[in-house]
Length: 186
Picture 1 (cartoon, rainbow, N blue to C red):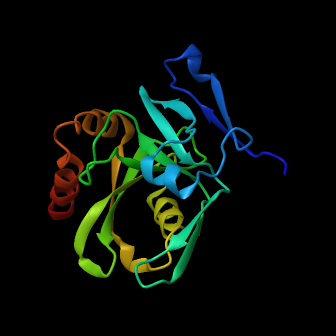
Picture 2: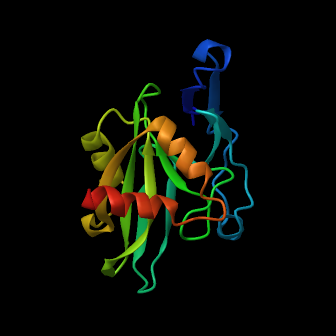
């Protein structure tokens, strides 16, 4: 299998914004179920606006399993998926991100994800970075889920503001949720 490569441009403040980082599937191996549960497998990292993105699933990889009813599920990642190192989401894990192809995107789109089978209850945020528009971010998010009810709402936030807020989540994980609720009412 020919390895696919995800090229990302680093911060504009680092070497004039021309630094490239490559993540290849040849280094990334599908983790065993035990490794996936423990988070104990190789996860490439890339810099993004002064934070570190940890890639759990490169674009083109697949996650699969069985739900509580015995029904198999499968997600093919159209975009790289991972987390922002040093952050904490409302679920106690680092803040989740899908990484789009537009390194110069001015905004981050924050999706309010709803709980499976409890569609009226908030679950967590999924942050869509490097997408060219709110419509593209929404389509990318929905392309990774088998039920559109996971999608609760979406807001746009300037990249610099997002970075400040997401880095403040350590110890204050409800911060992005509060911003989302405030923006919806305002």
